[in-house]
Length: 93
Image (spheres, rainbow, N blue to C red):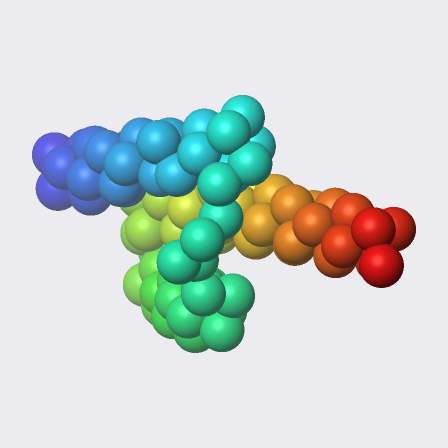
């Protein structure tokens, strides 16, 4: 039962990133997204993943792998948007 609660919490946390993914990938809005902050959060999640592996908690392992994946999707989207903007500015100059 405790693992089910943990897995449910992880799934809710992953769903919470949905609007951010939509803003970056669909609307190309990335203002205010700090790549260094995302990097620190990703490091924290990776450490929680290692902890989950150490204690044998599948809920922690699955949740952290999925959340890291979602964050990577956002980071890639932000970097892509920023690269496109830089190329557009260079073409105008």
